[in-house]
Image (cartoon, rainbow over all chains, first blue to last red; front, side):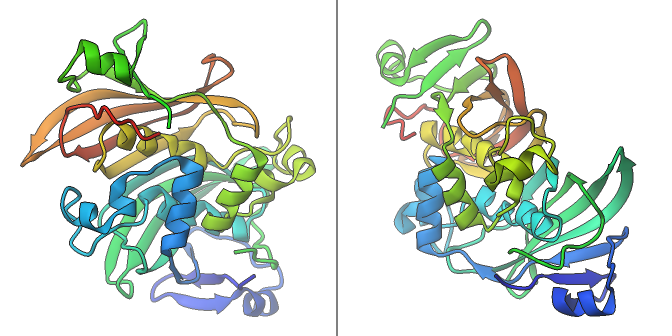
Length: 171
Length: 171
């Protein structure tokens, strides 16, 4: 278990959830707030495990020579885009357990190679009440290369049971 | 390894890849063609494995009582939407090894419960040359309940190294 981050506005003010819980005993998500994941490197083992459970054995993910040749990926095998994109619901669920995903759009803008360090960010664009829940539109972005390269861009809609950030961040 | 299916137009004419290879020695994808996955049930073990590799431990996927209560899912825990959605690139890559995903939109229209039988379908809407490759826009749909319920709806764009369907379907 690792603490997540709450970042508000730009430049991103990163606070640990523990800090946030102290400074903001009832921290609630507001439009404009951005949440960032911990940095993560997807390993060969991760890619193999994902290939197993998803059934996606595209050789661009499993075979360096094929990835360079047919795939055109200079540095060899790449992480499944949908595995990298799983960071978005994981990040939202870590802060809002019980979140229910309604939609996600994904533009795979740059490859994520096995071993690259990636960071996911979700920023609340719009928040509306939906019965007892809230429906939140998030901008969802994933970066590599020390945040210099946008690897995935898109938007998600999720129903959150509450806007209060969980102090028990699970990611 | 299981043979995939090629379906063309509606009503869906399902042929095994082996049959297709015989009847259409150089079967090439055309606009309107639909490919269907084998039927699949995601098990508790699949969901646990995916939670491990993605880091998404949202209790709506792991805890029946929580899924029914906070999540509002009557039949208990649901499969991660992004895991179900992984069937789309898996299906495309099975028929076109070396396919590179450019984008995907996903609307999670109905829950997929652990153990539900799901089928994914991708239908080529538009095909354009892109240098030595082709860029294909697919309608991507996933059904449960004997195809009666649309669980996921969306579109994908993928670069295919060739339009020839692989006779070695990997899924």
